[in-house]
Image 1 (tube, rainbow, N blue to C red):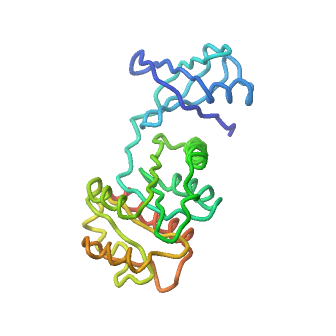
Image 2 (image 1 turned 135 degrees about the vertical axis):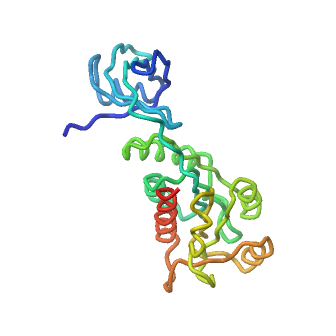
Image 3 (image 1 turned 60 degrees about the horizontal axis):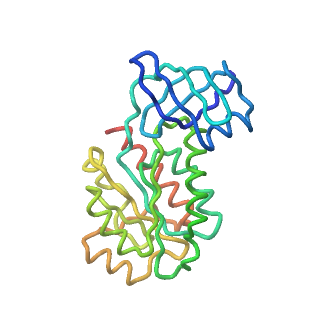
Length: 244
């Protein structure tokens, strides 16, 4: 089966069966200059908010492309589950983001813990992460682009998560109960799981989390690398999305 390239665009609705999409910017450059597609080429288009369509390029110049397309079914439902990960060493977040995107996380939070250098979250890195997420979304044929949010402190992020999600789950090797041990209560709600960095949480951070009423849970009997723990956590959360 021949691969069909997918592009992020803007839909200009015509009717329920025939849509016109506009492709501009970097997506247009990739279509015309890199892939060297031409008028008549078959492509897929999506808006990053759940809508996608398939059709052919009807117009292509040096500034934009127009695609006449038919919707690909109903809009994809957005996952209600998110993950927060401590800022890892350079390169590890880059490798982790495609996995978290493919596993359907609605939002990916990256935070600095007390024992991590501030240089791990820079404007240049954030721009690169957005590009990695977009490429991953297109590769796995996902219709929603997950948000990525960065936080200078764990305490600031936790306050936000408590407002945004019905459940905030904290993962640490010191946990006393298995992760998702009360998953029946979670399946119909939004949740965010928090995984620390390479050194885990400090005792002060754990005390703060417990003081705010968060249960400390664990994934198993072994101590996992932060990279492994994040993927395992997202995999388990993705099963809740299937059930809800």
